[in-house]
Amino acid sequence: MKQIFRLELAEAREMIRAAIGRAQQIDVLESVCIVDEGGYPLALERMDGARITGPQIAWNKAFTAAGHKRSTHLFTQPPNGPALPGNEAFGIQWSFEGKFAAFVGGFPVVVDGQVVGGVGLSGGNGEQDTQCGLAALQGLHDLLAAQGHSVLVEADIKK
Image (cartoon, rainbow, N blue to C red; front, side):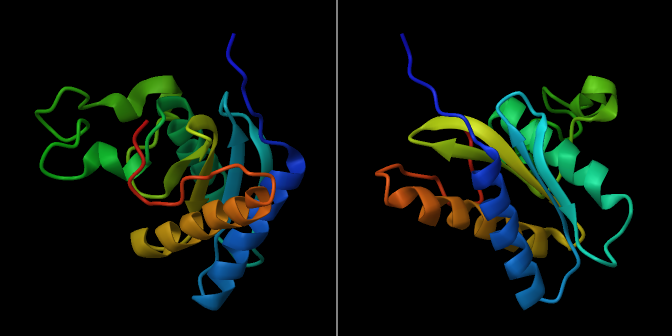
């Protein structure tokens, strides 16, 4: 039998707090979504003034990262990104009624080697979304470190 970990609201809120803190530091308006292992939102926030399309895009990115267990930008990273034209997963972004996001801003949440959810961000450019996503993962890492858990804090995650 396998022991599993589940993200809870307190952890999701800490991740959002850390992501929004970073967004404020770099002066970008973000929407941030934290999902569980099934891709369903635990917490979602849109900063004041952020685009109204951001929450759905952030959710799509988090859903994709959690469900496919990889950072969303890896699908289209040249030269071998599987969703690039001519590669094996070209067109995957039309899966799940268009909810599959194959561009930068979604990261799986990996605790003790297990994917337990995802974080998605929308509002900045790719570099800004990545910075805020890494801040969210670092926030969870800092929260769980005292309990002896490890959280993967890196941009290129593929599990």
